[in-house]
Image 1: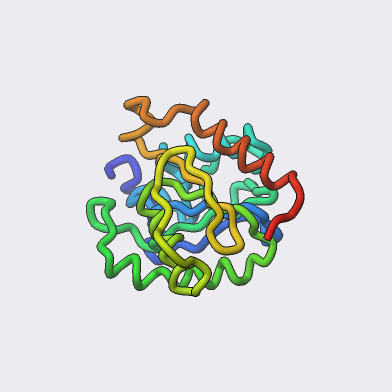
Image 2: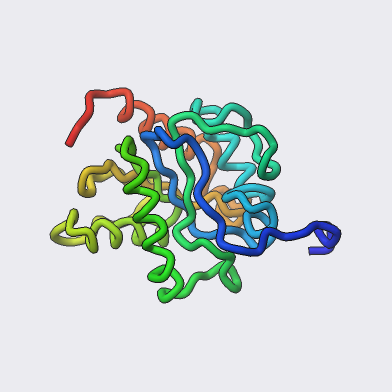
Length: 198
């Protein structure tokens, strides 16, 4: 993009970000070409991130409502954000092979984040990616749960919540509003504050 022409892009795999003692993992799709691919931090420097971090701040998971760049002082509390695919895919549509190649990174992060109890999947691709991860690990039997905004289901040891992705295609058209995402995050918060479940 022309407005970022003077910037040096990160342009390599984008890692997850957040609180290592998180009980919530937010799973997104992939770094945006001029967002995470540019800044080196997931959901940072683009409008999807603006929408998401404002909601995380309102829900008490972020100490400020915006994520500008790595090293801007933003911190998450009780939350970790990870992309399903680690590099910006062409046309923002990852191929099944890309998802397969990157799945192990998400699995390793999840293993290292021992406190995670809830997973918020942003969009159907992230939902199916997480469900596939749990199936491959042998923690999910039977039919896969269907994605829907506001869906909530037990998947293995986790409670999986679904939300439409905060892309401009969804937020500019009203398919996803701030109130809709706030409601899902409020349910996540209530779940986390309740008794531990297996």
